[in-house]
Picture 1 (cartoon, protein in one colour):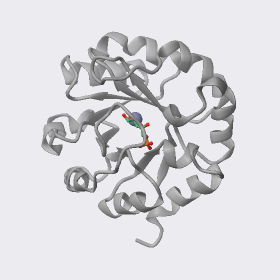
Picture 2: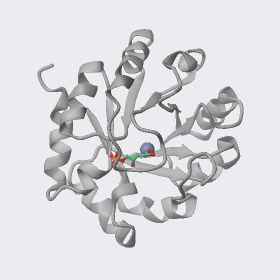
Picture 3: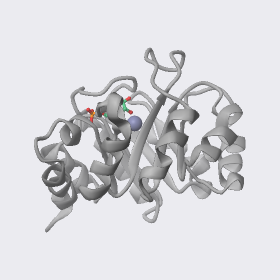
Picture 4: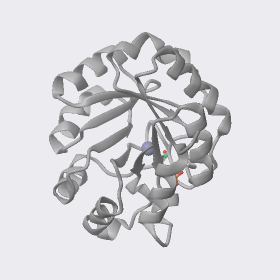
Length: 214
Ligand code: DX5
Ligand code: ZN
């Protein structure tokens, strides 16, 4: 299991230390939740903050864009240091154009889907994708409950294209990561479960082991 701690649950007054802490605690990727107050009813941060923390780790930056018109802002996120860029299929704009633009920028393209969006909606785009992000909560806030009924979507995607990475995001802890692993998930995003833990390294290890001896 690839583990991507979401800094949404970190101490924003001390971001550089938080990134370093994740780096040494065994995080595989760093997950960055970008919210615009339009696509989701919450606001977080944008390219300047991502650029500022880029120097504190060499781990891939997994940028989750919860914004309208993602195509318009892509170059700035890439320039800030995004390695993997997920945009929502439900956002405005032509998904194919956005996927092509991400690939041309040198980043790896991913499409994210909200709980109400079926897996089949992504099927036409699978060939060009590095990953699909299946939301296991309504996007916008950390600390929500994992929706286990999203697992059939994971299975459908893995069946359609076994080599495609499938990431889940929302309500992930050691127990729900196990459920995700059983469905075939490759990447777990975790905010509260990692940043809220006494021992982040132990929490990350617990998530990484979720697919042990399946
Ligand atoms: C929700 C974000 C998630 C969130 C996960 O919109 O995309 O990445 O930070 O937080 P937890 O792990 O607390 O559910
Ligand atoms: Zn996210």
